[in-house]
Image (cartoon, rainbow, N blue to C red; front, side, top):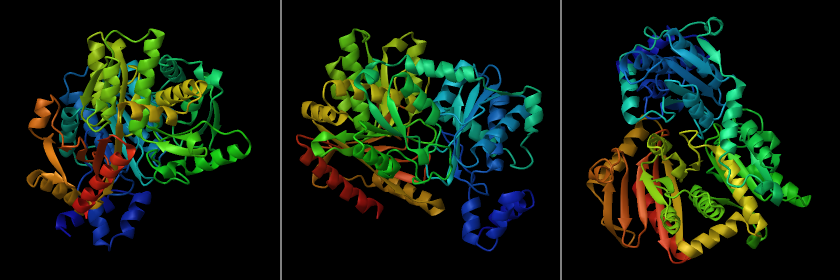
Length: 572
């Protein structure tokens, strides 16, 4: 072990107390464990911090949270002349330590002369995005690790526009962080005293009501669910969606049955320690409840699951053509359904703007292009990350064209159809999903039936994703090696199909598409299949996005299998 790491370890031992000190002492003879905790500082990336909860510079704890908050304060006070006023809105989710970290953040910011508006209870991430703009704040922070496993927490940072910080701004905050000593340079104060002095102020519940009203205003046909008698099984996965999702569905008349064992906040996420609605295990408890309801002749039309900070939602739909089994639908499929529904219904209702616009990311289904073309809707493509969609919404609003915005979505189960926020919103998405399910139910169709129709009409755009985890320092090096090899030794053929184009978004591809540079590389094959490779910005993963567009589902799935074999050879 490098001497500097042992020195850092000893310094932490002398400056901390409580459970963090106990954890450090428990690994005092384990050099590997010490190295993993101290070999680096958690990087303040575009989304802020994200890491395993625990002790050390490479962990989420009150000291690393305090350091990030001091850096944010320095940036607001000294480094960002464009920011007028000094106030920050703070929210937190149901993860372990989230409330504690939110108060740590509040105390550091307040001690630096920055007014803090703090939510008094756990709150969805999109509501924080809304609050930043509604309250006129300089920035926002939400303590969450989104859909990561239970051992993680995070610190997600927003600018005055309600979007996650840009690469440039995040880099500036990181520069301030690098200058700070984690123990000597972080100012703080007593939470109760700062609250009494009104430097920290709890956010009034009226803001939550205003947010829900803004969400409800985005409904295309708010009475559809009530008329159709839609019945839904919902699991908030022990997160922040429980109250707002149930309230918005109550308002549009949905009969909601909640999975009781995943209803209340719980950072251990029972039955689902990896609370990601992209994964089938997130639906295990909901599926059990759905089966019980079938036995009572009260079958649910739809299953919904929102992640802990309620910015993503996944669904399972009852497939009447397959014996009534519930089938999970992908983020690409749900996004395509929502886009098609909103464009078609608004056209029929006469509410479609003259120049409608939709936004998707570069790894999101190309099926959106076919749907938009039919409705003469401009489709804007941006880099992966909902902040880029939020920035485009902001530009439309700045130009007085916000009414043209129909939907922004990404394959990772994130959707937004209004301009009230600048981040994906599972409260909004749950409402629209139920609304369109009810509308199609009134026509005798399920969402799965409608998806089949879209495939038959436009082609079988089948998408898949393979995420491979590489933990720790060795894992980060392995991810870097894979990306370097793909750039230096680009494949000419992928499983017998010629590669006809390669787009490297660290280079000219980003410039030609007028996009910021990003660590993404894309291989387009002669049969229109696509392989896109991107290291995750928030998890120790490298992600492979697979797309096939065959004339039949069998041909598309066959190509997906071929691309999967190619990927396995890369990572093994």
